[in-house]
Image 1 (tube, rainbow, N blue to C red):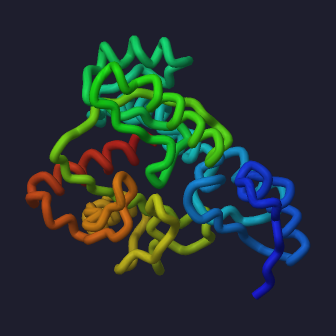
Image 2: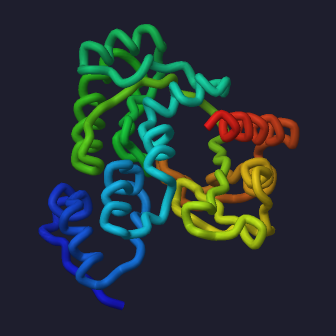
Length: 252
């Protein structure tokens, strides 16, 4: 295994420095780039650059990343597909004043969330108006440092909720025959599905088989250990969520 330094250490000059990452890949004659999670993992522009440099981006296609990687845009995409979402702002908020207006409309308690966020970064709980400014400034600065984008949106904070994931099935971009094996793509990167998948049934099969993992161990906001199937959700709830996933996939 070859290690290539992309220092200095600040993320903006290393993990978010696309020319250095592409150079490291070319120097080592890499065929593919796995972005991990966070940083450039949800950057459609980075995925496109990999394609132009004839490097396989191990992850969703750029168009898919644009549709759901940007969390504020993902809300709109889900709503257009008829999938219910948590009450929140209509897209990203332009600044702190706009966040205040959105917060009054959405209601407290709420979450400030980074549009480009992931892994719990760029998120702050806000219990009331008095905490909004400090939370907004801290979350936006954290998102800018981690993702190169400090854009924020507002969402109602769900209390005493079950945090569950649905895995999408993606295989065509990896050059894998769907009749032979399926590649499941979760937020934390690709993994193999447990059974062969077939053609257009891929999304439905993945939704039925892989739902609904429940982050049984969390550190504050990000999940650390997933338990599948989600033990805290009744079968009827899991089935309903799976159908919503299928509806979303069919709309793409």
